[in-house]
Image (cartoon, rainbow, N blue to C red; front, side, top):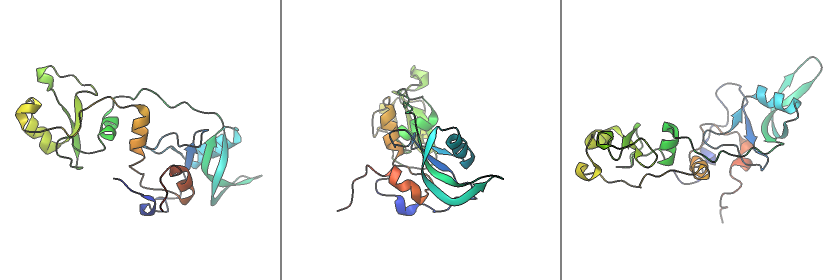
Length: 193
């Protein structure tokens, strides 16, 4: 999934939700996967509470009896939020670490997870022993040790760092990207010659 995805996004969300991209005080998204978005109501509330600065706006407006305001499309937090250092061991984060592909055959179909050292043989459910696997490879391996299954790992499983997962998440763009967000999501990508 390498490459530039900017041209592949639908330009209008399903419905008139107008989500706002939320950037940390360093102008980087709080998260890439899922992309840090707030509903327009939360963004407007944060503006009135003085917690964010608006960087870009939609053409749409929200009105009250005494005021009108264009809806924010990009906001930046006034105070820096330190990203978590510890990565939670979840199914989603495991699939993200393995880039949503089977670690035995490389397929990107429906995934499950597999214990490299089977639980029946004392294998534990840890970052270092669990990998993403397609149903076919998981069934083929079964409860056998890896060397008896005829399968090999594409990468050895290991505990990922938080920054590593954020960088992997950037390679899996959301299904919707407003044009005002592009400058804030891709500012550190290599420019074309």
